[in-house]
Length: 279
Ligand code: NAP
Image (cartoon, rainbow, N blue to C red; front, top):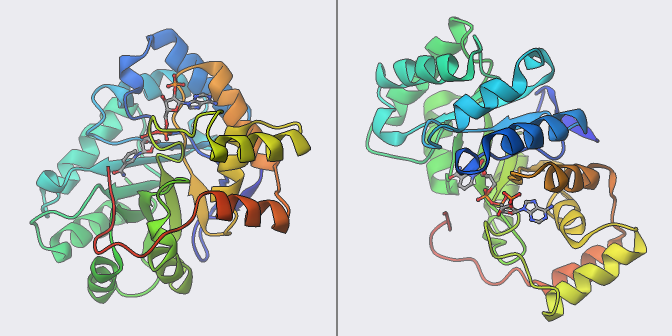
């Protein structure tokens, strides 16, 4: 599994990570086995959130004894992202995850608390050793500009945003903004949540024929395509060990320029939408 810097000057993080939304709805022992298979195959970036029900508890069981090799990320709900609320929310997540620090802590989406308050709370958590870095999720460029004015340069580790073959809006402005400012882009729902192109669609056929060139699978080709910019880290969620192993296989797959062009044509970027799409 390839690793790359998580933003400018950031730690090395696995190219492909593991999402955990709805993982608590799956069979618990299979979900744990899926996370562990993914970790063993190098997908050491694990993404969760206080919003994801009992996912943090499932992760705690999966990562016991392996914590130090991981890049563990959780998120605070906007309704908890006040100066004090973000700190207690983080402490609850640490307890549920049975760990004493997070590698990165994100504001899940922008809410009504002033960004200054959330940033102050994040900086206090860093000073206390409870988080190593912080970032945001679902921030468009205007939000990012405001955040940068509040935090100053070199503080925002990542922006986690929706990115899949049929939703490429972030390529217009969010990815360029993040690359300019040394901020990692974490691509959520890289398989469209549950809308992966069917094998019988034209796009599905394109993915299969490129997969055949590499003895790979359409989903591996998709993850490699999404991760073609060095700032982007896709985080597919899998609740079966077989799916996790397949997704990890994308971590060493490099597409040719002509394959990237073909996928680009089959799943066009489309015009820039007014607002940033999110799930
Ligand atoms: P996703 O990763 O695009 O797709 C998940 C679906 O793909 C599941 O049904 C999963 O099935 C299936 N799948 C995964 N690997 C597969 C494989 N190799 N073969 C066949 N099917 C496969 O959707 P997502 O969960 O929405 O997004 C990923 C993660 O991003 C989330 O889990 C969460 O951590 C994060 N996220 C963040 C936000 C945000 O606002 N920040 C929003 C949405 C998601 P199985 O479960 O059966 O394996």
